Image 1 (cartoon, one colour):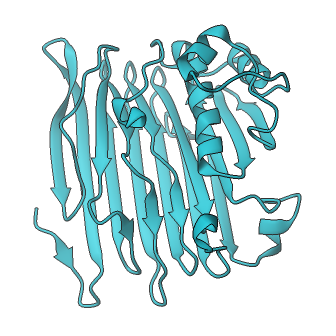
Image 2 (cartoon, helix red, strand yellow):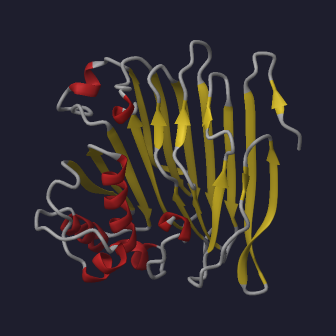
Length: 298
């Protein structure tokens, strides 16, 4: 499919992926793309999961740009999606930049949605929607991380706006319906009942989860110190996370959906915490041993 450019110079990128089992392993059974949005060759690192890296060569979205992902995982298939770099929303004096993700997982299938963080440049106008549709018997783990501005470059996100929706359904029944909306300078960003002045916020989701998984996560979010240098070893040893790695964090169980929320001082801080949690709960939630994507090591 050819790229589509509007009269205002905005671009639309769209990617549709379908995963299925062929010859005893998960493959990308169907792929359709439009514009600058594609994937690298899938990897099969030996954990029985098809690892796919999503590529958006422009590196970010300008005003009016749209990025659409549609993923379906068929019965018996196991897939993991990640990105080689953060997604950037650039300054816009005109229309908003739009990112839409629809993730569908059939019974007996698993999907892990583990992108790097989203960076909101000062002056950006972002609209982000993620819809996750799970069948009973599906397995899912995913996270979202949002960085406000680029403090090291002097961008303090003095202007900008975000509207973000995350919806997770099981057999069509909503488990989580969430909407986050702000303008730079809103009280929400500084107030202790909101983002509390932190520059990164995020959430991790896992299904199915139970009280044992919740207890494990809350233990990891405890106050005893440990090193995060070896994420896989930390997951195996099951020690608490170091105090200060997530100044504000909490975990709850919405029936059988685990939700972990955290605020941090840097995307690296939040990602380290989420990686540790993901490695720790992967055996229970995804029924696989920890196996980090190779691209995370580069």
